[in-house]
Image (cartoon, rainbow, N blue to C red; front, side, top):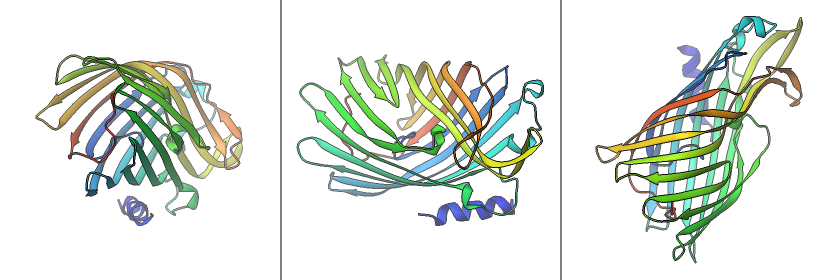
Length: 297
């Protein structure tokens, strides 16, 4: 507990994209993989609106904790895995939204993150990651459509470089809408005011620092564990008690890659993950209206 308290203080003392702003949320994600091992992620977080100014701009502060557990199949991983079976991720996020002229909007996100297996008591600078995003939106109210584009840097995609984000969102009618782009695409069918279904394809992943030597093939290495996954499936959302939402997802991975990397981003060991099933159950509570261009979706 003392070790986690120190880590938490470091995270909150440092100055997105995946979770909607102005919410309290919980998610439990599970990726079974019989060839190599199972990956389970449990996340709790909050995003609190701090400023809502004249319906033109808003500023929110968020914090989250994620526990990642990995259960390996010993016969398929040729080294001792006890050091990389559990990771903890603490995140502090700042997000700014502003509505500009002519139906333009901008979102700026900055995020500090500590993600590590904490095998050593000492905190290392390698446990610290910095993420960010800059996204512009252009709304066409007449056509009920929106273009969004920008750039995202998020270690929890399992990538060590920024990626472009671009999407086109269209509301067809009161029941149907779609969003095509990167890092996620989806089609939504609204059943009634409380229920909706979505078919989706999205980028997911994980990054955690291995903060002590790990022995692979009788050699000691330092580096990170990174996983990048592309998931496709079906999601059900249910709204209840006015501001609560329950969601359940199920699907299959189209791409699943996990490896131990050195700090030079070179591969040390590839786990040769195969594609498999994906499950996610979560619940959120909406804290209130945020200042942002209203998406047609």
